[in-house]
Length: 382
Image (spheres, rainbow, N blue to C red):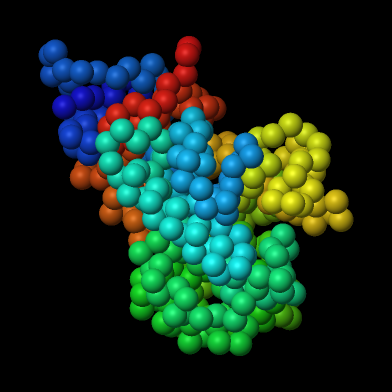
């Protein structure tokens, strides 16, 4: 048994001070009023003790990319993610030709198995988010139009253990029966890269969609006469809404509105891409030029290519622009993402019995230490 003491513990319903968090055999054992004499103690030094963050939409960064289908790259990314407080993630693939996607799925399946073993020093790979290829070319954004395909559940079936989340356009031919069949396989369906009307979007929800991919981006906007996919996603309580809270993809003026409207169905993501965390300027990304300019990643024609965001940065941004208590914002980056893909029984909060995936952070939510299954996998030098 070990204890994390001298910190403010962030639980789903509030902040707890004056108690310690107990960890037993890699699991959260609960809170205690006093630490037994002689016990192993981790001193939080007055910081926040938070659940590890869960990123359900992350393509890559620092030159690595989940779409390369490379196991060592997935391990390298996992080892870097814990430095920013992310302890679980879904490597996210782009719209690619199906044989290429299968190579990616195979690599992610391998990383899932490896990250479940002792000795893994990074964020655990819980599965894959396949962003496409069953999307609408009218809203392709940074996705490759040549690889967009008609929905086919038989292609997905052998990979249902890997693909935990899949982005699909509900209005394209064959999408609704695909959504129903994929849902039966246990895959969570997200509407994105879609030109659907509100009515078509809600038909997707009735068929089984429970998620919206990077809300506001690459979908029909909210209009007072045609609410579009945005209106359908915001108004339906069955839908979890992803949000890239980098203050560029979505105006921070909307953060508070999103919080009030979606409450426990708001999911902070990064959508970070291969060139994220690289120096400003042009970079090659899979044969395409992407220009990094601070928080912006664009193709030369101005199209947004993805984000440079980290999930701890998303927490800081959202907190700064809403004034919400930190525990509520952390829920949006931990518990609610985990719940949106059916994994909240294991991760996402510091409730007894869950995996001891824990972040210790300072008052501004800068990560000081990260624990995965109770073992410290990252600590700052200070």
